[in-house]
Amino acid sequence: MASTVKVPPLNVRLGATRFDPDDAPHIDASALVPGSPEARAVVAVCPAGVYRETPTAVLADAAACLECGACLAVASGGLRWTYPRGSTGVRFREG
Image (cartoon, rainbow, N blue to C red; front, side, top):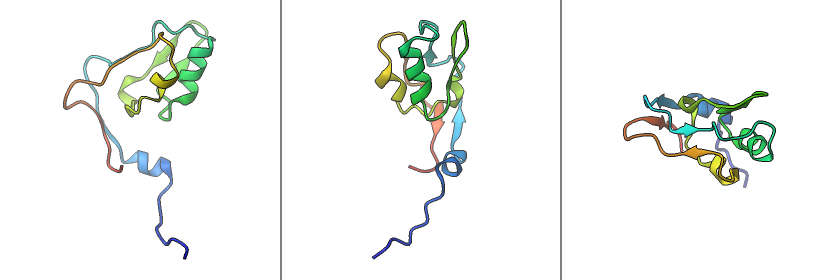
């Protein structure tokens, strides 16, 4: 029997996600070397597009972070990441 559950597209579900940014960013990408395999992997794996690579730096928009940890799974030491302080960060509307 086929399922009749209608699941909205991911971009619609993520669009309902709220963020309460911390005053202190919880991501420090300053040690990532632009063009390195580590930097390319961190940029590619992030589902929220938090990371952006320029010729001179890897930039991170910590306020848009989904706190999934995917970047940590592919980083090999050039990325510092912690959870935001309590009551700040992502607030998911859907699981």
